[in-house]
Length: 382
Ligand code: AQP
Image (cartoon, rainbow, N blue to C red; front, top):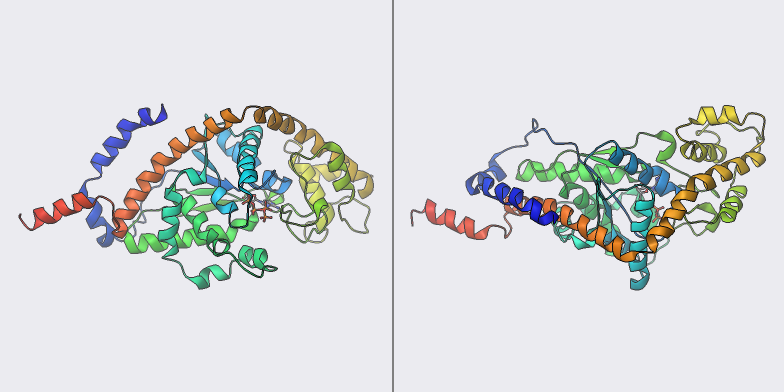
């Protein structure tokens, strides 16, 4: 239905995109600084099991806020990224369904957001190849996520090395201006800016400059409960380091009870010097309807960190309860989830196809070759 509605727009845009303008603009038109880009939000999440509090508070909670404030938002379940480490095919498909249910339960509304599965829009892989041909091995080798993830690996998959380029393709394909992410992704957004401007300089203005949105300091980096010097991460082998949205209440209590703090019993928010307790205050603040860390500390004045852990656990359990219930509800109807992803794919594909046609034409690849041949014929006066 969407496709039909969009067809006239698509056709008229294609017709407007007259051949001589497109071919000459590619090399002769330098970077157009004055171009005004519409504000567009894009972000992605890997379908690797359940969401943890870091993913939720650092990214997805913000995604729903942006959607509800009327922004143009596109959210992608990035399955191609997840296969950079080995995946069991059956489990991966289950995880895609699980992640779709989780997104909806966290407030992503397919009527307001475009929610789709990355591998169903082939243009992500195509743009990845083109951008990969622009970037250098030296630029990728120094990215901290690559260094962290491969530290203990003997054989490093090429995909793990290249995935920041695919991430840049994901973002640029939709001419994104803003990307809501956690702090761990900042270098990848910088790489995206670099590749976008490299492309623009070489082939003419095509992509806007994009910016990371990290506006809530306390959410930017949720820390491991067992080692607060590290970020909360699903690949952490320490099971109690990470709270999942689907954890049962008793598991959440157990994990927070075991959270590493320090020898001072007072509850204060001092993220520079007291990483562990400040992490708990940050989590508490983010699940408490806009209460600041300072207000939280004032509320719990007089209780020690041991007792405070129970207060945090209770707040987290309360906040996650409706989300867990909704996840289970959505999971009862997987076909509906697949339908939502299919619908999202159609919306995403319309934009992705348009961008790729422009990119291929500018790079000199095989798009519109028949029109090119016609133009040659005309210029030779045949
Ligand atoms: N600890 C965190 N604090 C704040 N934000 C975080 N994000 C991840 N961890 C934290 C943000 O979550 C979004 C989606 O992340 P992803 O699915 O791509 O997973 P990831 O970044 O690889 O992080 P994970 O879940 O912990 O996985 P591993 O163990 O593979 O590193 C991103 O916006 C990310 O910033």
